[in-house]
Amino acid sequence: MRLTARSEYGVLALIDLAGRYGDGPVSARGVAERQHIPGKFLEQLFVSLRQAGLVTAVRGARGGFELSRAPGSITVLDVVEALEGPLQPTLCGGGSGCERGGACAAASVWTRATDALRSVLSTTSLSELAGAQSVFDATAGDPDVSL
Image 1 (cartoon, rainbow, N blue to C red):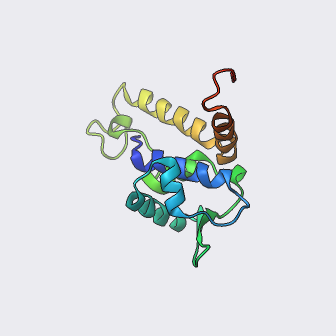
Image 2: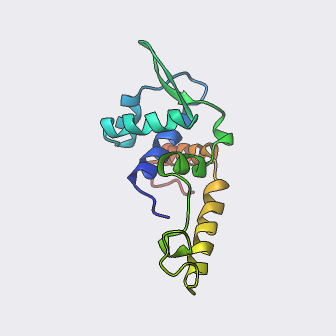
């Protein structure tokens, strides 16, 4: 159940694309600069996200990347699982890597924690996050605005 920089940066990159959905392809360089993601690392992420069918690559002078479907239909769980693999409990969750073979009082805690995380990630869409980000961006630097 470990989330890495791949997930964090991948979600940030797709929030960026979601905020520009419908405007055409977005350059990887622009995403990297706006989101403070190392360019080479972002390129690797886009390969995985493209293979998972979440983004489309467009070649050419005005090329770049765009979401392959509407941001409201892509969840954070979709992004995380595209970059990390299936979300599973820790080794101590009674899975095949557990030395106790499921006979462990802690297993239910890890399973419930994973289920809770899966619930939050699967009910949060990129459109929600892009909307929240646009509010943050609009109010950045304005101390008189409260959310």
